Amino acid sequence: MTTLTVSLGARSYPIYIGTGLIADPDHYRPHIQGGQVMVVTNETVAPLYLEAACAALTGLRVSTLILPDGEVYKTQDALNRIYDALLAERFSRDCTLIALGGGVIGDMAGFAAASYQRGVAFIQIPTTLLAQVDSSVGGKTGINHPLGKNMIGAFHQPRAVIADTATLNTLSDRELSAGLAEVIKYGLIRDPDFFDWLDTHLMALRDRDPDTLAEAIRRSCENKAQVVAADELENGERALLNLGHTFGHAIETGTGYGNWLHGEAVGVGMCMAADLSARLGWLSAAALQSTRNLIGRAGLPIAPPPDLPAQRFLELMAVDKKVLDGRLRLVLLRAIGAAVVTDQFDPALLRATLGASGPVTDAAFGIVHELAKPVL
Ligand code: NAD
Ligand code: GLY
Image (cartoon, rainbow, N blue to C red):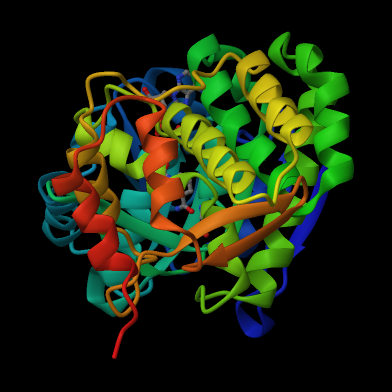
């Protein structure tokens, strides 16, 4: 087992990475507050891992809540079901919530923990690759709004992250690939050696070689923990973790939550960010090609959905948490391993990036001009 630390002073916490951790009480006990525990999971994960998690919690008052599965249920209604259960069972402020599942469950249970009685303890048990390398670490929690992805939420750090890599054995190939998008992201934004390592080890990852997967998870979490420790509330460097996400969130919202997996949309979004970076003259043609190749070899799409009109794409990109003072900011690449957040891009080049996937009308393009104009 590997243990990493997210260093946030009094709110520092461990990330445990290894096999068989779900069933081991030692990984939970030091991080559980009070005697009341609620394990929040979904109908897919529950039959696989809920029993093992509960067995590790003997001696505590344990409740379970099984939500429907899917991004389409990352909603206020599902969140209310968590509050309803907590209130109905008289959970007090010294309780602990445990999120058992992928990023959807982690984000929702985390937001419930952030807001229930103004904040209670919670533990993340991520069971997808995406959640083990990204969403369970760093304290971003929340739900979707019909008008924008992840638009309602809070920062609330977990007490511990317990990443049991054996859970990845039951994950579908499509979900594994979706998780690889966020792994590749770390190489692209800040770790060129990791990008090269991924290039070499990609097939072993897709074949689920346990040691290779554990190494990819460790290096991803190391990168994320460093970024979060330096900029917990995303006032600067943390925004780099959103490479591809402005494009990707537009795809997820525009195609209807759940039709494109988050990781698939991020994979295409990273290709689009790389494309725009190359058009700006920042990224070499060879680096653009390497980026596309690695994402494609990970089993991810590299082109946006043809049926998402550019006008809609731009409208959705405008509803992004990186829009500040009315200016659209994007994470772009100066090189593989060197990302920047910038509003200094020629909108005509963004038009070309979007146009590469379909026609862009002048009317649609006006939205980008409006967002990119200087704020007085
Ligand atoms: P998910 O939570 O929907 O899980 C994917 C699918 O795999 C679901 O059907 C789930 O039930 C199933 N599943 C989970 N574990 C399994 C297992 N071990 N075996 C078999 N099936 C399993 O999706 P995800 O990709 O884990 O997470 C995506 C979500 O995470 C998005 O909502 C995204 O916005 C969010 N996210 C949050 C952050 C953050 O920092 N908070 C970062 C990245 C992504
Ligand atoms: N997934 C982006 C972040 O945690 O900041």
